[in-house]
Amino acid sequence: MQPFTTILNTGTGFLEKAQNHLTRTLTSMKGQYRDVKAYAEMLKKEDTLIYEVYENINMPKLPGELYHGSSIVHPGKVGDEFFMTKGHFHQVLETAEVYYCVHGQGFMMMETPEGEWAAEELKPGIVLYVPPRWAHRSINVGRDDLITFFVYPGDAGHDYGTIEVKGFRKLIVEQSGKPAIVDNPRWLAK
Amino acid sequence: MQPFTTILNTGTGFLEKAQNHLTRTLTSMKGQYRDVKAYAEMLKKEDTLIYEVYENINMPKLPGELYHGSSIVHPGKVGDEFFMTKGHFHQVLETAEVYYCVHGQGFMMMETPEGEWAAEELKPGIVLYVPPRWAHRSINVGRDDLITFFVYPGDAGHDYGTIEVKGFRKLIVEQSGKPAIVDNPRWLAK
Image (cartoon, rainbow over all chains, first blue to last red; front, side, top):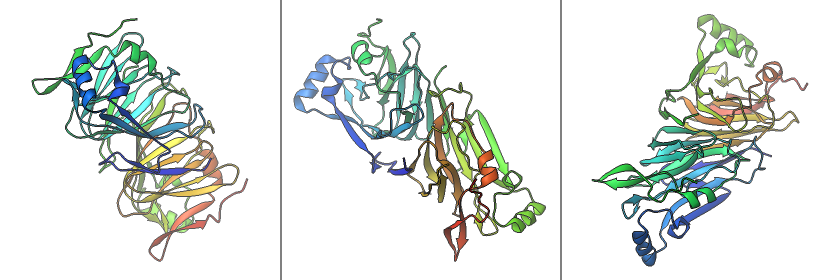
């Protein structure tokens, strides 16, 4: 394989020449938001764009390769809960991910199958190490796009299903105009 | 392992809370610069700082982990050849590296054991994929620091010895005030 470049616009998150661009709307977040009524009402009006990913993923699915790209979580809320990504474990659990925040304000919500959880702040300049075994979800708590650059091993894969069924233990909602970490009432322990 | 953050200053390259900081001076670049006389004269005056690396490398040496950090190549020349890193293959050849340039102007010089070479421009916003098997060296052709953020697999390791003995096929020197890619007269084919 030949070396190749893409170009990240830190203001918009657009990764010029990226191999793939995916978009996730409200529909794809079904069952994830605490306020089911607010979700349904919002969806009735429009299948709002929640987040986008530009990614370079055409390399072999091997541990020595590095898939990478940019993630843009748009600002907004469903009820009082902030816009966020679906969140996932890696299919190969023993693989890490590095995030570098270039724009916006948010959190990475993380948890392990063993019951630990952690939330780390994301703001420009923050480099976050998500170790192997930690599921992760970006949450935008600001008024502008939350933009991160990410890198993970080529063999990692995505397990979205576990989170779709269980949810994350913790949610981030707006309370008195500030982000607050609260228990997810619908989280399934098993 | 718990998630952790470090903070990248894109103006200086300083990675706050990094696990390690290494510095390379002129001494460590012995035999790499084309102009041996200019090298010796420069060293007589001062063992000049050429580049620095802030790195997070305390994770297990496993393929699923991601070592990462920032690299700062200071501006300058030895004779007409620009300041650069030592350059290396990975010990585990089949491992890639991702570079994201946040400051400055430069090139990544690359080559494979099979005889291919490539030079890619580095400037703010450029995301460079160095595929498995490609040795790589950052070269600062600007007047300011060249700063990149990098990520590579935890088991990759560094093979500096091959480049120390063979050199790179190509060098970047200043010709008529501009960077020019030229053959390395001391490059060893074997």
